[in-house]
Image 1 (cartoon, rainbow, N blue to C red):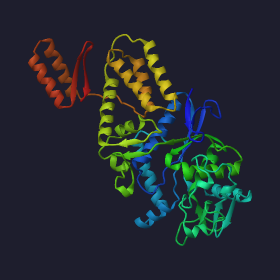
Image 2 (image 1 turned 90 degrees about the horizontal axis):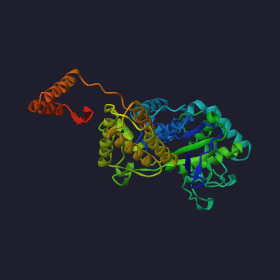
Image 3 (image 1 turned 180 degrees about the horizontal axis):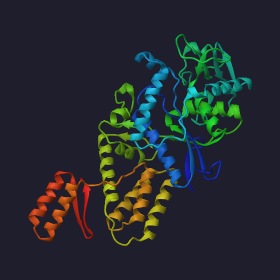
Image 4 (image 1 turned 120 degrees about the vertical axis):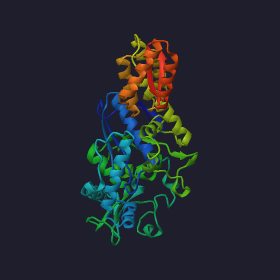
Length: 447
């Protein structure tokens, strides 16, 4: 039985899907104006791992993650680079796909773009206006927050708690509002900006409206899970709930999940502090599977400390698992004990996708394998557990000359020519091949 920590109720709840055997899941994607940073990657990998575990448990997952391709940041980047906002979005969507593929992230069931849903967004806003939840002011359209039931409950706030600047408002904007805490659904276009025609004049969507529209258009008025970074609880997800439930009269999402932040050497990552790391740059020196393993094997809700040592430890641990996976089969296997490991893994991961505990079980299984319990059934089970974390090992074939050297060493050992055997071992070690003499014969690993 899978249990999920639900941010809305701040409690661990049994997962009961809307439709048996299926999961409708929406995760906020990137604003495509730059390469994604390691914080974005942490969220992307965390929810990909959660998705993979649902699939491991037999669920069919509809996984939707959007691209925000209409935004002030994109407009500003377009001006800097001397290209159109569409070209900026296309460029960084391609970069995103390349980076996350290297991290072993599965493509979403759909990756909707805001520009492809503009008429749906306008219709959504018009419905809110017609129902009295929104109003037009000088070409902008704002949501009446005071009409929202339990507004900001997700972020554990009340209207009285909210500060005027909580949603990034300006003094000029406040004068156009009925209430300073109201938020924009539609923004009137400024001179020279990209725009779409609407009943309120030329403009473009506010940030929050897009995810409500994309989620409900693709998955329906109510979805199982909505996820994203902890920084999105307020105002983004808070406003999504307000506008979605005002329009449909239904619960927007049954479970809210949020991943923790990434710190760099114990300091919160920030452009202003100069410790901002893009995945594009990180992958120049860190193997994609190592980076994936580092992100995927820690509990998604806890903060991650990105350090050189932590990444190195991930590399060492991943190499151990790879060498375990590649070793030759041994003798008789106790399949009852194998099932004990699998049940223990499920118990760990069922508890709010606790990857840290789950990977501990995988290492226990690896130790058991290395003590002489390995056959095809164990290997297949081992591979399935690794795939939950996005780790896939391909069968590695040695070069013919290295295979020949291993055979020569074996012949030398049989002939008790240990000097030659040791010389060949050293030669192989120089090539990165470490030999292990076991009771079942010699095997090799990459050192």
